[in-house]
Image (tube, rainbow, N blue to C red):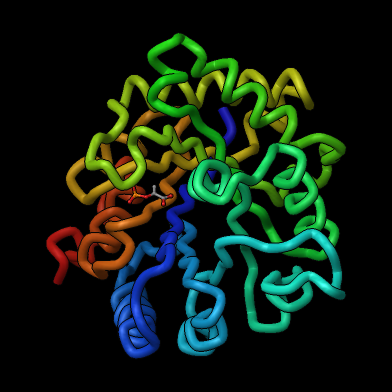
Length: 270
Ligand code: PEP
């Protein structure tokens, strides 16, 4: 079985001010710096656009990557309000979230637009985190697998097998995001295994086994280890809990725990 390193990313969404962003990034860097086995898990934070340069500067020289929450697919020009891949790279971004459920369902982004953004990120050298996942009504109608399959097939259209090495998938059931209602470990595992099956069908078994699939939706320190202990759950995309450094560290510890504690006591938030 492929050994996939766990990947925990914090999505700050439209939260925090400049000073709070600075403090969160600095304290996170400090705490990660004393986690002996922190290199066993990849960690990134995704602040709002305006705080990306600040976070990147504070986190430079640390193992913590910086990602954006969105990007536009065009290179430059008359696209008021948008931000390009080159701009994100310019301010130190390594990752970008595409297709987050809030962008799909609040802003109205389509699978086609998300696919354009994902391809632009890959072509420009930024690693996309493609969010997929069903609404509550879709789950209740038994459409979970159909939605996962559509989001993957449409989102990854024209993405090559080689490019998949830079893609992370985040399964985020919309009913679990920001609601405090987490998918059970079994529900997460079932959805992740299905997503991996679709990746094998689109590409092949080696791509399916190598691709990291994060779980997102009310991940907290008290459920992180069990969720990430599932065989097909390769990390977490964390919203609310990524804004509190002790909670985020507790989740990172959950990503380490199936392989043993990092020994730094960060689980208790020290
Ligand atoms: C998210 O924003 O991707 C998310 C999973 O949010 P939360 O952890 O708050 O549910």
